Length: 467
Length: 52
Image (cartoon, rainbow over all chains, first blue to last red):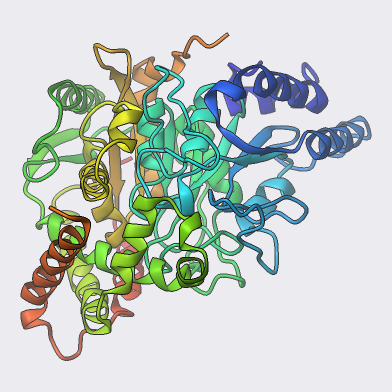
């Protein structure tokens, strides 16, 4: 059952083939057997999950359906505030983040019928792309133990890939949904800035934070996005743009769609196996009728620099109290990054925000006049060893982090929707992946390209051997 | 390189990049135009016929 897709399980529950309690028990059993090794969870809420599943099962017997996710077990990055459960944000402090209300995205999924299994491991304060965490244990790549899961939504990537949960929420400030999705061989969507409310999720950078779904397939991500997208009065940056029917849009063909493969930046220094897999994915997409061509992009490094200054300044401001009062509790690399943000002059922070507006206008006008979506690598290499993420001088570890997230960060600054899709395995058995990037609020097209690719390939059907 | 020097070098590189990029920013440029850029494009895209 835990090898099913989210859509498949939701359908089976609706048809009475599986009950919400059975589905929840199956996930809890798997967590019990595997998570001591995988370290995907920080908090498992067995009592709460089973109680919710029993309520849904009773409702089902009365013919009352909560919504399209009725009885589907999900789990959430441990920066989503849920009343009654601790929210450590990957720090040593169990109750590090307390919000006035439950995380809106979680509440919307629960309203659609989802069962909350618990809270997922993450890089401390969502700062780091590898998924290491000295406080809660390093999340392990399910495809190869001792290798990084990607981060910062590390537990989200691991839990979904390992079949501990049918889907998850992550957050993405510089790549933190797409990096673990790519490293763990699942699908992750960073929606357009404003598409999904961040209310009740720990902020790292108000300007660059995005909350989004992670699941095994594009169709499952579309199902989750449908539940969480839309205006939220609790998040002033959430958009009032109408929410389309994402799953309906998947049925349309991609024939004639203009797909750009970047000439510059995105393939520089990329591992040959990764480059070959992404270019092969573009060929598959061309074979489905899309017009694939190379495109020279406005320098993504400029937006990456802008995004870096903004994220570091805002992150250090938000977490200043922790840094000031309990710096010894923070891992050295995270502390170094926070300290760096403290030294950013207000002048440069504000110039960066002004530049972001200009660079975004220019990028959208230039790129989307020529193509409808971009296809590019996400991670420059297959998931490295955990030693690569944790061993060495602090400045070298910070530099490695910057290199690993260099292909995702520009799209946080640009606020564009970006979808991570698995597209093969390296010779060492680690997942390879590409991202599809689209126009603002055009998640429909991004998902449609990803789904068309998955309909033509079977990478998303592979499962790591864990039992 | 010690940690402090590495940190200073990183800050200097970032600030140098911003200084160069911001040299010709228009007086009218302001942060909120980022949100406007996303919204405008969305409205324009809705009016376009897209391949289906």
